[in-house]
Image (cartoon, rainbow, N blue to C red; front, top):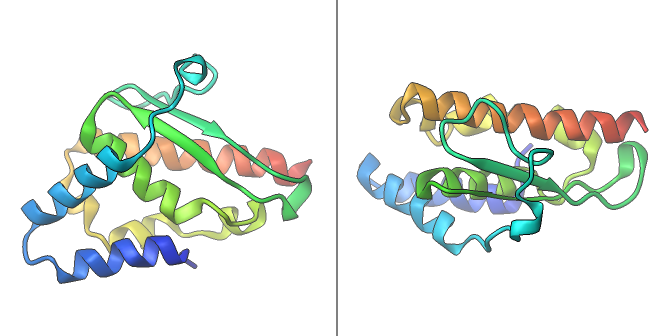
Length: 142
């Protein structure tokens, strides 16, 4: 269950021959990401478990399981900004109930990210997914 935006990323990855091109593509996604306002870069939005500084600011419309989930994130590392952009593409626009059903590991495996990220970056990516799922779960529970 991936969004059209994530499918676009996956298709782009399929066309690229080597990981260096994919790595540059992820960095370019991060460069295109609008920065998060400094006012939102606070401890409450900071993601623990990431080597780099990462912030995730939820923007949820509605209540309960039908609430529409969106978030905006940022990082002080370009590759991580790109990973934030990938996660935005994966989750933004889904209901919180759908967010909880997304097999993030499976979807991200399609991009072969874990095969090419350092252990620390992979742990950080998992921490971002856990934060997203936590926020969606809290919203779904009402």
